[in-house]
Amino acid sequence: MKNQRSIVHAVCLLLFLLSIRAAPAASFTNGSFELGEFPPAAGQAELTNGDTRLAAWTIAGNGGPIAWIFGQSPGAGLDFDPVDGTHQLTFNGGNRNPGTTLSQSFDTVVGEDYEVTFYVGRLGSGTGTVRLTASVMSSTGQQLGNLIAIPPSHGYGERQQLVFRATTATCRLVFTDTSTATISVDLALDNVAVSPLALRAAIQVSVVDVCWESLTNRTYQVQYRSDLTTNMWSDLGSPAPGDGGTVCISDSVRGQLRRFYRVVKLP
Ligand SMILES: [Ca+2]
Ligand SMILES: [Ca+2]
Image 1 (cartoon, rainbow, N blue to C red):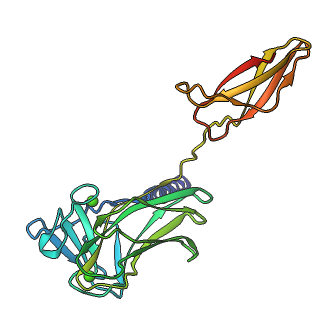
Image 2: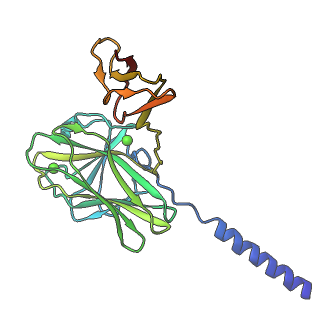
């Protein structure tokens, strides 16, 4: 009987461990808006608050619906392609209000730096400002990064970048349509990515020493030029007296693409 109870306990413990291990990792996904229950026949879908067809994203806020569009939608003024893949989003279409939010939570490592990148575009002939505010929030509600992205006058602009340091094991990326205009002008979004921020390092030479074997009672002048195609040499510092040994002159070369040197014996 005792053995049977032990077996039951062991089985329960195993199931408990399995249930912990089965918890899915919430990695950032569907940043290009290619995944979900897209209605292919319609060519686009209007996503209102709480709509779950766009995989991994949550739609909320107090603005108009988000349009999830396959390719272009010339009838709606969307006359440019997605940045990536075949689908893109537009905000405040049909002269409806800004204020809609699009958000997604994902796992992070506390203390690590991340970058969020995305592209915003502008469509339509209307005037005024359309813009998208990107924020990253910790799971305790702390704002870790914020960026207001304004597209060019038509189409998509440069890649937008928002850097943040994770303070909790889960963070949330929130896009808010903070446009101040909507009549005959809309905002587009595509190709959102979240990745660990790569540490970019480079070696830089800031000073070089020009050295030569010198003779006593002889004076030398070091000269330089920045291009081999010119005969214009410039003096580097003052003439240097020889001492019978190796003499060196230092030169700062920070920011110089190339520099050539020669040492001239003075009469
Ligand atoms: Ca896309
Ligand atoms: Ca609009």
